[in-house]
Image (cartoon, rainbow, N blue to C red; front, top):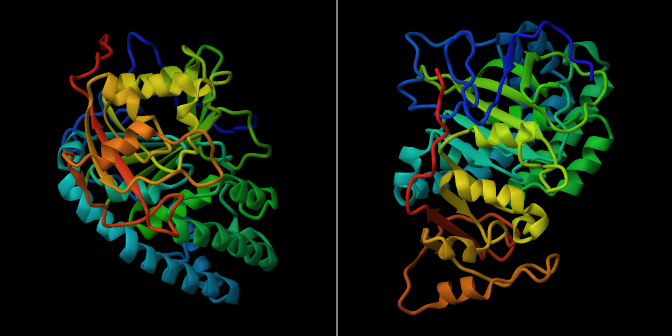
Length: 403
């Protein structure tokens, strides 16, 4: 792996002490990230204009740089900006705003207690995460998709920029139509090399959400079971999974520095082993909320039991559709479950994953199923959607912190 630059921080993750801090004193994937207020600082850190303008340009938005002002006169960028702007406005109106309002009421307790949000199988879907849990100061996304590089827009030929915006438009329009990414479609697009990986897509959602970028760091496991954090630089070749990236950002008008992490990783049991650096890092997140949608029913199967057990052990709340952890795991452990929307037979792409007990719970005349005022997921065409909110019966064991 070619990650240049000096090592700024060794992220050491131990089962007995899962706290990592930066020079700023702010936790990095800590055992207890604390409230937004506890992470606030007297004045917000400066926005990195180079990163922020770069992400803004990739999102079809104007920045402050004279260089990008010139590039914004190119027809491919203008076309992308217009189309992505319309798609975003439509998605925001139909999904994100109703989702935000719904979550403010039906997820009130979970929102209040969620400082760290874990979103497995979400890929670069930062948009849904910030709509549901805008108070989370740490968001952890994982997926198979590579992280990639940001384009050097001002150093490549105009044709390269045109190809980038054509492919990024395909990726984002696909998501904004369905509300989820199709992994094979993403991989096919990434294989063309114009959009190098998930990083530009996360940046698209960050900027369209109105956030400002403060910093970008690379993350890689070291030989001692910890993690090395280095400044962002372009990678000459793709590292072996797992590896990650962290983007620090600010919400307008807020002094709390927030972070979104994305890890390119395989979480099947054969790769995601107990006490591996990635497992220990996730275990060190402390109390968290887990959110899963369009999860390909992977957590139904025993070859993903390590991740399933980790989620059940570490989460205070789990918000998911029927493609995630089966209903029976929550009921057998005494979790408090609230159902939303409508349950339907899984789409034909997936077999042997229908949950009879979940269907019975939805159809129980004495039950109380709440409405879901927005649509996403595998049945986006039929608008038959479901979500399950599970609250654990007691707080999980907390990893002790050794000072």
